[in-house]
Image 1 (spheres, helix red, strand yellow):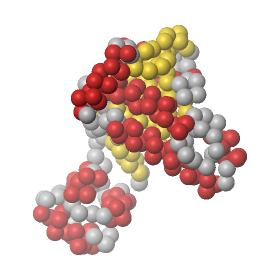
Image 2 (cartoon, helix red, strand yellow; image 1 turned 90 degrees about the vertical axis):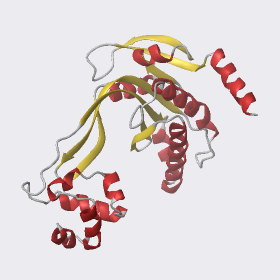
Image 3 (spheres, helix red, strand yellow; image 1 turned 45 degrees about the vertical axis):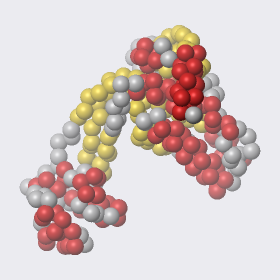
Image 4 (cartoon, one colour; image 1 turned 180 degrees about the horizontal axis):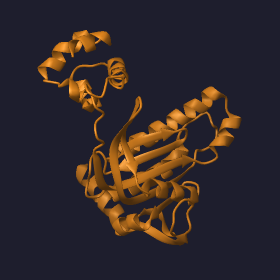
Length: 265
């Protein structure tokens, strides 16, 4: 173990590995939190991950993926006409717009107890119920979506026009697992149709609109005003799915929130 750590420039971490009784055969099972707890810096963690993949199977077999089945609410956010922005703005200004947009959405997702799991260009995938689960995750996801839709246009960006986005929220059963293949690892990968369904709903939503699936509706209809948009045949999905648009919280929810605020004052 110590000679191997020395060969990858981590000899000074040998004592930490030894003190935690890290078995050489378990090296590939060490996650990001484990490596942080052992004191490794970001650069050292990347170096460690890359080096582990070259170890022989007899010393360090690849771990079996641990699958976690759970009901997840997934929110997809996508900017409207982002390609038009790309044509109008200089690259530096477009980058500033995307950064501002991501930070704005990320703050709201975090405040509602969600987790931004994936960022691809101007697309954002956020999860509610992973890694932390709450009894009202679907409600949290819809609340975050409505707040993003309502506040996005007020962002001060070089675009010169209010930003708009389409949002889709889907709730359903998924498998969350860590995958290891070749030299890459994908932590918290989500398998199931729920992310795909959220993406398809997002594509059907009006600018600054929020569409949700039937399962989400069943969990949030007491809290939000929803309108049945009917059944849709969605690309890549075998059966039609019912979509509901969400316009805002019900009056009782607004009154409850106002009462809470008054109490805090």
